[in-house]
Image 1: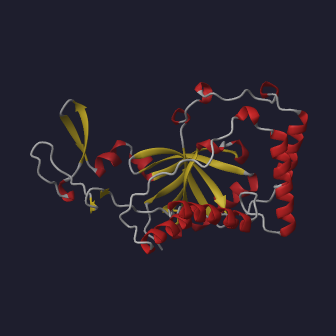
Image 2: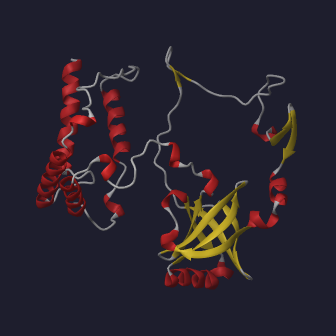
Length: 300
């Protein structure tokens, strides 16, 4: 089993469940080096003292809070713990709320909660009680010196902890140029509204997460291999001029676009090839490769 990120306990009332926190997120991210474009040498960074200019080894680095200009108070891991011993060691449940009442914009990062051997029974009891009542436990916890609002949710055999944002960490949308609620203000016709509903109904499915994947990661790897194969490893690719100017919103026939989308969706459904974008997978692939070939011809 992977090393735990945090160890503590879930607490509510007089109940305490010893648990470990494990990452539930597996990120597929490229690790890019920074390169000096003049000679293509890697660019590096050093930790250095702003007083002496000399490099500082990691073993000599500590955290400090600047309480006045140029003056710092040093804080160790023990200082962070002593600030609130209980908060740093417990997932303290504050309330049990209906699952449907938590808005998606509050959620951040998922983790697995794994019980230690003494906590197996109470862990299972909390998991099944949450599942039976349709509720989520809302808690607070300190992870890596930051206090989080969090939701404890039953998922299969596991209890998952999903860190959440506090209300004051969400920006208000009042200053954004958004259309008013309803459709009258944007002059959507009854026909357009009906076509939109038909398109949504035609593309309606049950949630099947295994049908989705990060295709851009694969696309970028293919582009990297293309440049290596073509001997273009040190070529800085310049942006192309747009093939055509974007159409103005004023000239779009929304009803016609919706009608065409319906036809494409129905045709793809009959073929059994509709992908996540609503287009057949083969059609999307051919279209993408067509654009690539066209660019190569222009470059030649």
